[in-house]
Amino acid sequence: MSDHHHTPQPPVQMLQMISGFWVSNCIYNAAKLNIADHLADGPKSIEHLAKKTHSNGPALYRLLRALAGSGIFTENENGDFANTPLSETLREGVKGSMKAFVKAQLGDHFKAWGNLHHSLKTGGIAFDDAIGTSVWKYYESHPADGLNFMQAMSDLSAEAIAAVIPAYDFAQFKHIIDIGGGNGALLIAVLKAAPHARGVVFDEEYVVKKTQTILIENDLAGRANVEAGNFFNHVPADADAYLMKQILHDWNDLQAITILTNICKVLKKNSKLLIMEAVIPEGNTPHPGKYLDINMMAMTGGKERTEKEFTELLSYSGLKLSRVVHTHSPLFSILEVVKA
Image (cartoon, rainbow, N blue to C red; front, side, top):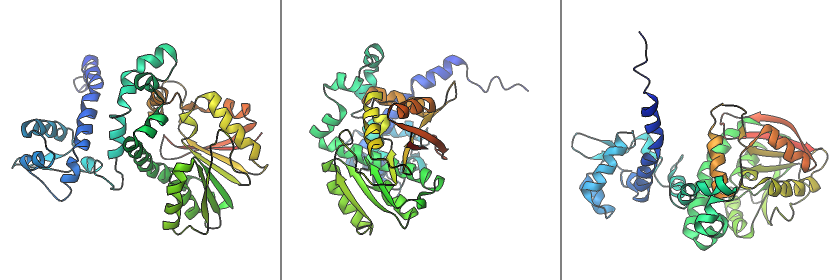
């Protein structure tokens, strides 16, 4: 028996790929309407959901019917809708929540993807061209979107932490600085894995004000603190480990070299810099980082890099790659870096 009739013809496969954004837009609208949150305590009728979300009943039914066909929500024999493991990820504040991420991707990031042509023609940043300002400036003037984006990043941070903590021996370090460490989630996890170490979260002033409180809530008042600053100007000295999780991919090569050179200035002979990012494989290997790379191109002018590209950046900055530790997630490898 041949299985040629199981594999869709190329036009059918291509149609599925092209219409992928239909599905993502439906997910986005379900997230914006908080449907999964309304279903947290059990099945609800479409009338109930429409009333709760100030929506048109028949239109909402059509949205949820489509999503239920993809395993996102389920419709029972009474016509009530309930959550599934997939729709549970659209709830606020649950472990593994993707709600903030879908709201960022299909909200403020969507215009950049719609303007991808600009990046391809000019090498410029699609977001800046579409919106008239950089994404960082946009978030300063749209604080609700900015907070949502920070939430999306900290939700994804949990995935990163689950990948990197078991993959590397952090207990060898005594003084750890997390560069661009945000809300401190990575440092908190690392300090649990390295009980004799103390740590610093280094980030912008407006970020670390909140982080200080989070460190105290995690009983790390004696072992961890914050330092405000900008890594384009300087980074703090005297650590035996510097962490950088998904920082370099926000920036182009020249900007990345500036950051790395600042680290090189303070890196001691036996200290290590640990860069946690996707390492893009060569050739036709499928890898989620290859599309994340397009997102960075459109949003910030940054990029995902191959091992060869990392090696070049490091050598320009007075550093060298000592080894790459792969984790169970393709989006997070640990590049162990030392002074050249």
